[in-house]
Image 1 (cartoon, rainbow, N blue to C red):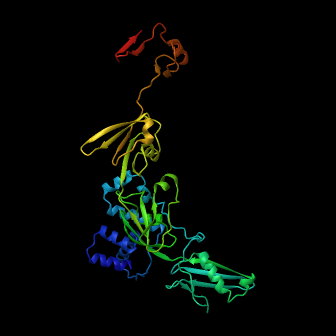
Image 2: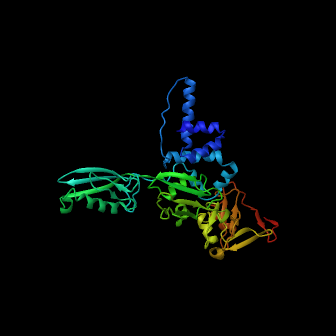
Image 3: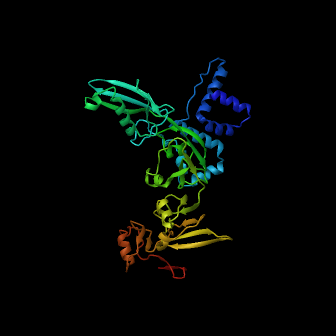
Length: 416
C-alpha cells in the first residue's frame, strides 16, 4: 500500500510537505514513509531483487506512530516562526512530547458502559458441570450467531445488557444456566475500529480510524493538537449533529484532571474553534507564557496559571500594556484589585522584580574578621557593628575609621 501510494504521489509531482500531509490523511505515518524509502534505497544499492510484501492496515492510535508522525510532520509543515510561537503558548508543547501519547489502554477490563457495535468480537464461556466456548462477532446487522440459535441482536447495547440477553438465549441449550449448575461469562475479546473526524484549527485535521475505546484526548493527540490560533479550552465534541461535550484542556494541564475526557463513537466530530481571548504574562512569575482565558477569569486567574510570583517578584502592583481602538495605554493594578481586574484580549502583563537595594543594610569592610553586609538595627552604633563582625584584626589601624554615608539629597558624605 505504501509503495503504491508513493508511486501515485511521485507521478502527481507532490512535494515532501504535500506528501507527508497526504500520507497522514490516508492513514500512513511519517515513519512508514521514511522506513519504506530507506528499505528501497538499501535494496537498490545492493542490487538485489526482493519482493515487498503489501499489507493492508487500519490507521490506529499507536504511541510510536503518533509521536513520530506529529514530530516529523510538524517539522515539514509548520514554519519556524509558527513553531516558535507555539512554544510560547501554554499547553501546546504537550502535543510535541514524544513520551506522552494518550494511547488508549486496550489491556484494561471493558468499561461497563461500553456500547457494542459491528465488528466487536465476544468470547462466551459456559462453565460448571459442562464446558463450552463460543467466539461471536457482531455482524453488519448488529447480530451475533451461536450454533443453531436464532441471531441475537446486541448492537447499541452495553456489554452488561448484551450478556443478559445472550444468557437468556443460551438457556435453551444449557438448562443448568437456569438452575445454577452452570454459569456463563461474556467478555469482549476484540474491539472494533471507528472513524472519527477532527475539524477546525487542528494541526492535522481529517478523519481518523481509531480503536473504539479511544477518547477525545487520544484523537486530539493523533491530530497534533490545536494550531497556534486554535482553542485549548473550548473544544467541542459533536455526535449525530448535537454537541455532547466541551473540553477544557487546562483542567488536565494544570490539575491532571481527565474528567472532561469523553469516549468516542463512530462518526463523532471534534471541532477545535479559533481561540477567543489570550493574554501574555512576562517577568517575575514561574511560568511566563501566553494563556487563554474564559469568561469569569481575572488577573488573579492568570497569575495562578503562571504558577504565581517567583521569589524575586514585586507583588505590590502589576503593570498592564493594553491596546485600545486607536493606540496603546498603560494600566497599574494594585494587589487588592488582582481578583477582580478584568483583562482584555491581547493584554500584556508585566510583573516587575524587586529593586536591587536594601531598606536596612550597612556594610563593613577592611581589617576586620567578618566583613560584609549587616542589618541596620535600631540605635545601632559603629561599636556594635564591629562587635557583630567579630572585631578588628591585629594589624588594623585603630586610631581612625572612615564612614561613607549618603545624604538625603543623594550626595555622598565621608565622615572620619
